[in-house]
Length: 326
Image (cartoon, rainbow, N blue to C red; front, side, top):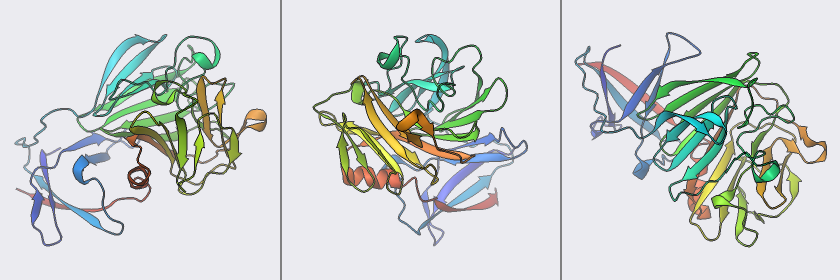
């Protein structure tokens, strides 16, 4: 493939960014096709609805004009982490620990060193029940700590703008793709036993704080961290968790309308049990869409800012790429 350079221009053709950071990877599931990741700077990531961004792609036929100053996200084979071989993924605002066989996150640590999952080998909700996305029970697929009959995971791309991890069960019946970017991560369920659910079982801001913990929905309503509920989340379907003593939050966004009900409770005050598509009664799974996409990440816990940021992932960004040879 030719070496390329990407510039952002406005509708008049004027250059507004002379050297856009980008990453090109071959599509693991569709050989011969390639994906292009373009970095929109954190200072101007919001694009107003109905507006479009325009990029000019310059090919130099191999002279090598790509200019990466550093990796904004990278994956490292870490060895044993809380009982299992893991990948450590370092981004601009989080550090992730992903269990290779479990195909789930054992830790997601924010920039202030607070672990919002805190999986460990203790029994029950103080340790081994925790994780994300914990898609099935009692099967425990896409769940940290899963044993030898779990998944085979591969790092498909490793920065500078995106880390991609593909995990497939040993019987090839279930597969998930994680794309981790500098400030958020996307999960796509490619194959899965249906029905399933998508869970966050963890420790907001490091632990369950009965006096200060809370969660917020897209309609602006909130619940305390020790609440117990079962309902269909309002559209757009997202939730964030936070604590009055911190200024950040952890959000989960479901992109497709799916599932009959969502639910939450705090398990013995040790961990959250939030589930897209999970019924409290009888632990019933209700998600059926395949493929299905979810986005997670950290942001500011001011509701107005948080809502704008999370919902910037809902509407697909419109863009145009113009090809040139130089």
